[in-house]
Amino acid sequence: MRFPSLINLSRSKTFASAIVLFAIQNAFAETPATRPATPPAITPDSKNVCYRPNASSDAERQKCTLDIYTPPGGKASAAIVWFHGGNITGGDKSEAAKIANPLLDAGISLISANYRLSPAVKYPAYVEDAAAAVAWVMDHADQVGTTADHVFVGGYSAGGFLACAVGTQPQWLATHGHKLADLRGIVGVSPQVFTHYTIRAERGIKDPTITPVIDDAAPVFYAAADLPPIQLFVGDHDMDTRREELEYFMAILKAKKNTTSTLTLTPNRTHGTMTNHAAEPGDPLGVGLVKFIQSHANAAPATQPAKSAATQPAN
Image (cartoon, rainbow, N blue to C red; front, side, top):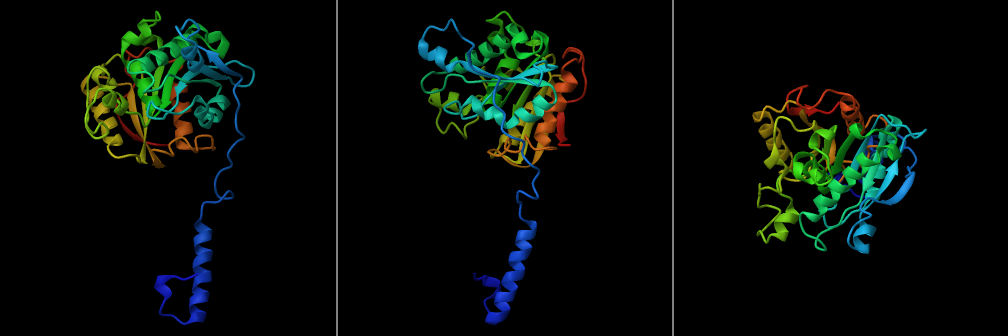
């Protein structure tokens, strides 16, 4: 092994220094011994439950399915409907297994839903699916161990966009006889809150990933004082402009006198690693998810302020 900084030393000194450097590197390396132990993988209690049984096609019924994870004993203080990432063009509901442990340990049910993807369908089909999944859980709350008035919605990346869309735009839940006020809260892990890249691409917008658009498909367009409480997370090394986009959303919410929304900066995370360690004891994302749900599961309605919208450091 050669090290450029040692190239002018004698061979014996080079070898000795290399051994010392190797020992130092390994002393500070992240190993299974220095990382918290990850709990065993969790499997759902029920898999591939169709939440759109009256859909017009077999393909739609097969895609619109969800998995149900409930705490030991089957009773939960609350439930969160979760949507996977993947740019609305890929991904799968099995992704939610990464965040299952801290939720189930805290007595919170997790319902992870698939939805139809672009380009097979166009906007707003996947938002309609997300709303249908949330409505299904509200209408079948007893099957997930809780009650209809203790349901949250959340997701990672593109799934966070869907969660924010369903939780801020009243028309989607209204189709199923529900109101935004029926939701206990919204969680977005590194979501887009402007009009999503994929929707921009579907509309033929040039350079969709770097051409910002805020229109009636954007959650930020619906910022208001009386939305359900919102908890957003973003990585300190997240993708370019994601933090700024979410900070803009918080600023608009604050201007609208919304006092129940928070953005948390999650340390040592890129966009792709936001949920990777959520199951580990003390992980800031896992802890933050549980804290938000527990604090709002039995809280006053969103119209009664709790705290100002702001960027908060992770605990």
